Length: 286
Image 1 (spheres, rainbow, N blue to C red):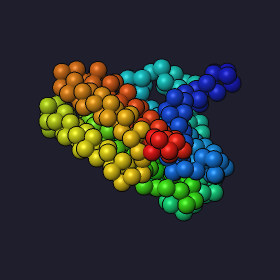
Image 2 (cartoon, rainbow, N blue to C red):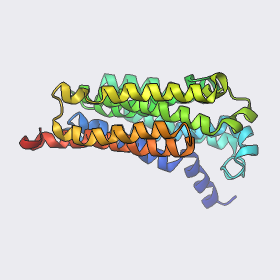
Image 3 (cartoon, one colour):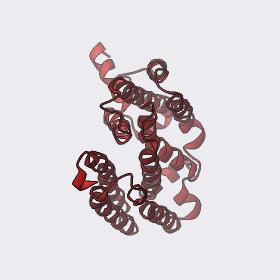
Image 4 (cartoon, rainbow, N blue to C red):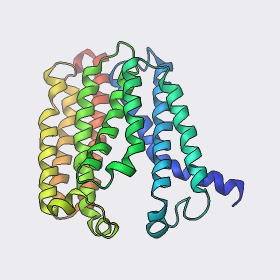
């Protein structure tokens, strides 16, 4: 392999799209907390730490999954020989060190969240991935915590709205992860994984996912009821709730379409928090 091919392989290990998405979610958390303009250095450090940690987690996931990937994903960087297993592990460690270095510049709460998340990223593949529901729950926590981490990076920022966003995002992500497991049930059976749909059945797993999502939708008006955000927030979050509920219903007949549409609803819900925060600067929209 040439240097260029190895470099491309290392980049693939990080899953660049996921890295960018996680950085954006952290930025949203900081924005909702009101710290983007007041503490830009902390925001940059938090976004950078998130991006590096996610890249490291994806790389170490590929390291642990290298034998399975030789069969199921032979085009990935390690199976095709672009990056050696040892090289992937070393690359992951370097990224983790970078993430830790940036996180240590942030307030204590952010450091605590970062420490928990780093341990979770390392443990996911080897410990939690094949356990019914627990692997899904860990992924859901990690996605939701990006918002909380961004808010915690702001010393004296408003944690309340970001905490609600953390809970809603985690529940919506858990719902989507369960639906994705229903979609992937045949392949997971062949790999010997014990996902929730395999353990309790597809329809029951989808019912659990739907109940979780309904709970998240019921909780979504909390920032408005607590007067943290005004009517502008409701104008966006209500359509987002509708999209997610329809997606959950759709998943009973078509899990692939359901989990895809649920993702759109989640993005719209995140936008509701951005709009809610931005509207605070406009008296008529509060």
